[in-house]
Amino acid sequence: EVELVESGGGLVQPGGSLRLSCAASGFSFSTYWMTWVRQAPGKGLEWVANIRQDGNEKKYVDSVKGRFTISRDNAQNSLYLQLNSLIAADTAIYYCARTSSITCYDYWGQGTLVTVSS
Amino acid sequence: DIVMTQSPDSLAVSLGERATINCKSSQSVLYSSNNKNQLAWYQQRPGQPPKLLIYWASTRQSGVPDRFSGSGSGTDFTLTISSLQAEDVAVYYCQQYYSAPYTFGQGTKLDIK
Image (cartoon, rainbow over all chains, first blue to last red):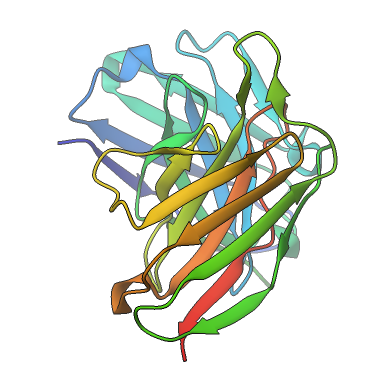
């Protein structure tokens, strides 16, 4: 059974940093693109970043470029998102999602909440 | 960036009746190399992560009930629930995966009338 479990969220002050993790199981992690999607409280979904199977191609939404870094460790079946220079607008539930071969998201984790506030 | 616009923002439908949600993209999401629309629909029930319902605009994901159907091409798409069930109360999102950033519509909240 495919499972994605996010962790690492919490309360952080503006300008601070967090590292989110996503532990994957039940599928061959190294053969899939992976994605982070976020959802601000009471709002819609926003695609944040994705990463190719080998980690050598990454894409980001403009609003996080230069502040967030997506990475993966295929030996550990884990996906990461480093969040730096956080601002209030980054407050959201962050979901990791498996990217199917047709580039949409067929499995999602339960999400981890990041709150940026002083 | 491709802008995805859904309509309506919310709707209420009686149990057993048809529900229709529309999605319009600011440019075509038809991928010429495979002649497939790079458009997906997701369902998000309260307190849950999104769930993939439809991809390529009209192909149901495995395990999705056949009362859910998708149609459309190019820039205009529709999600139809043929006979609304209580468990279909949710927010529905369309998403284009034609080009990054892979944008979502703003969501349509579906309730029971």
